Image 1 (cartoon, helix red, strand yellow):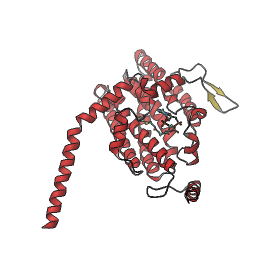
Image 2 (cartoon, rainbow, N blue to C red):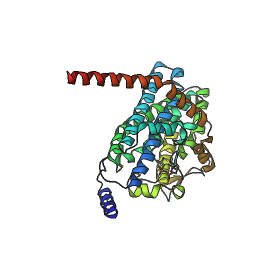
Image 3 (cartoon, rainbow, N blue to C red):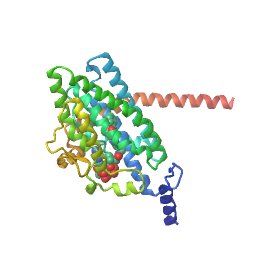
Image 4 (cartoon, helix red, strand yellow):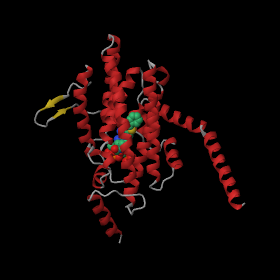
Length: 315
Ligand code: BYC
């Protein structure tokens, strides 16, 4: 019986039908989605921290408004994604508990510090650029609520990428000091951004299943390659060099070759030993604890309204 259901399920995926919350699905499909969608949601929420750090120090009103809008969008992305995860039967408090206790993963990239204003531009250009590369294919993910959430997320990510690129373009036309600040931000954010796509395909235990179920449409390495190819050309416009002496065009492959990734650094960051892991978790826990009274007040208000409306119904 189960075997038959699995075959029907796979044939629906193969026909590009969307799977919806109440449809039958293998346990492992559900678990894989909860894992990926919740990690994605956590990344959006933790991703607000390195940028939020610069809202009060943005150099102009226009930059401040743009950055505030971006950070608010990220809160929104987190909320759509938590909602999408909830359709799979997990509740939000459980997901928050996993994040706050350090059990859950979130993107490695948000464990690096934002030391100058140019870092905000580099995050937009590189981090959001990598996010778009990874997330546009997720709009075609087999699970309906995730795919639909990603459509809006990707539209907003495009704006984020452009605001970042535009910050860097302004710096590239500025003083010598601003140009140095730009190059140094690119030097610091390049490799962590390349790592964002996850381990290379041979070391990616989840890829085979996720590709079969059309949760993932491209492998980690294929997306990473597309990212490098696009960025190399964009770096020329910004007049910066990418900090990789081995990056060069390979005529035969039709792609840029690039240097070796420091996987030791990647796994250390994922294990909680990156430059800012502890700071990020502490900030999340503090926000959660300080927000307790708001959640309690909202619940008390909802209970009172419900009680009042029940009384009216009886009368
Ligand atoms: N960081 O088998 P693999 C954003 C983990 S938000 C941390 O290839 P999978 C933005 C992986 O989870 C960016 N962990 O896994 C927000 C797995 O561990 P578990 C977030 C990583 O899932 C605000 C293990 O390594 N984007 O862009 O097939 C401001 C083995 O990996 C990372 C998403 O979440 C990493 N970088 O593929 C600006 C997109 N990479 O779970 C921007 C959705 C891998 O087995 N997620 N790991 O314990 C995905 O597309 C996939 O989950 C990944 C990994 C490509 C990330």
